[in-house]
Length: 191
Image: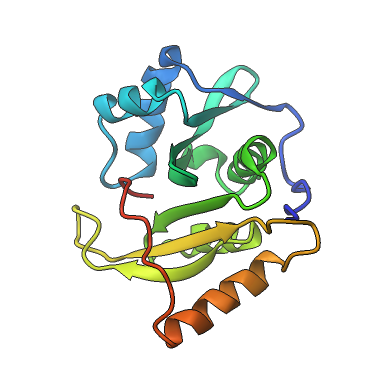
């Protein structure tokens, strides 16, 4: 599976590392600036406590500017939360976080899912660049305004000769048209 190349606009001093409990004050501050319905401290503590998850932090000059929370359920990775401080958006921070996640978790046959607001077109385009495709919709998913959520999936081919992620997504759409698609994973909070 190919991952988009490094963004030209990415800050040179951007560092990606593991997110820790000590980061939570900055995480909560970013969460409140970035989302209309922010996660609670307890939600972050729960996700950081899971041994099977991957939680990443993005720093510029030692200052936390973004984070990614990804949980593993059986064989599926669920991207639960990707946030970048509004002052640092559109600079490649989210791309760097996703690239780091896939660098660590990608394996033949790996599957990722996430939910995103249909109104968040910038995030949808970002996820599509990384091979995610819309495969479903959850009605009234977001509690703040009852907006639906688009359910997106990214699948890594089982072997190098397998189909590209776009081809897998297209096959999934064709299967759904015939009633053969499997349902989307139901866990998770929001994007």
